Length: 82
Image 1 (cartoon, rainbow, N blue to C red):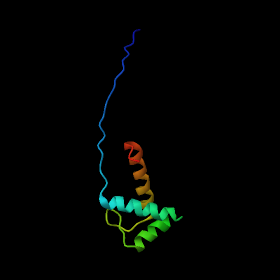
Image 2: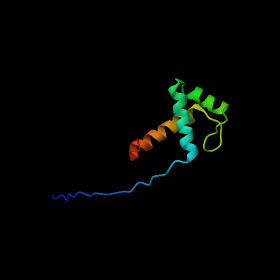
Image 3: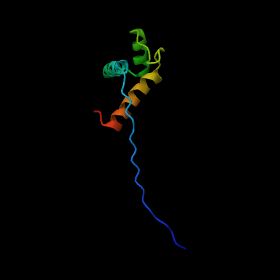
Image 4: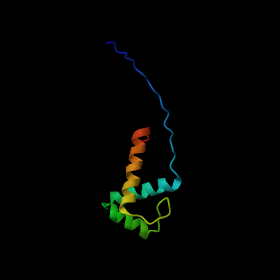
């Protein structure tokens, strides 16, 4: 029995979706609050008290805060945007 063996190289260009100015503002505000020792729930509460809304216009929950930090970290790792 004979086998066919080969190697394939595929190059894919991953599109970079730029962050809006508001998303950048939210991320920096969240990082600022996080540096003061607040957790995700307290950061969400602080953002709501300050009148911030999520990018989709809703009130903040702790999961929104976590998601914003996580997605920014993944984006920085993927595109080396440190």
